Length: 222
Image (cartoon, rainbow, N blue to C red; front, side, top):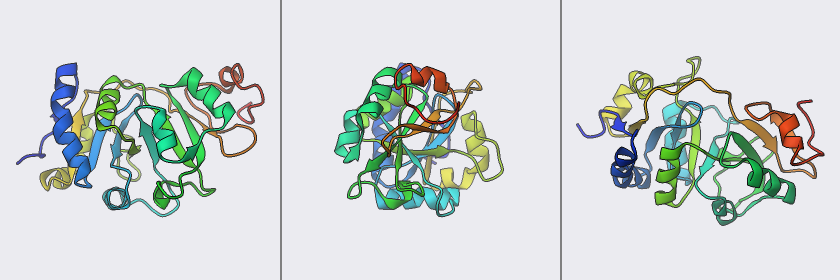
């Protein structure tokens, strides 16, 4: 049955060959599993119906938001999200890369499920080459959360995702892109950009000391 097996997503030819059907899958408000620079993620289009499909698949409790992966910083403005000057400096220096920025705004464009407790929306420009090609062709951001069941470590391969959600794959609800087994890596550093000064709210791959070479008044993660 179509959709019952992971889709090769390793070589540039495989990536390009997968894009049309993947975009159709996203347009049908279905869930996509894909490799990133850290772990395998789940994602959907950025609309209420698609996000709710992801909530149901992952059994996501209220109050735990998803982040957005972008393929171009211009997508931030199209979502009416506000990137302050210091956030723009961080993005120019460290994107694409393992840096997630939490931004305010987007009330009319971003579903409430994508907002954190304080109302911010987390955004990252992924450096994963295959995912970059997909996002460039799609022209819109996609949501992102780790592709694993509660209490299970994040998936590092497509086979781990398939083993946990075989029924969703067979029903065509879930499409899995197979980019091979990922190497262990640190999670992205998360910086809150909703206030007057940037604040580290999750230490990660980029140390605070490195971020301060770009934005000196960064708060947190001493």
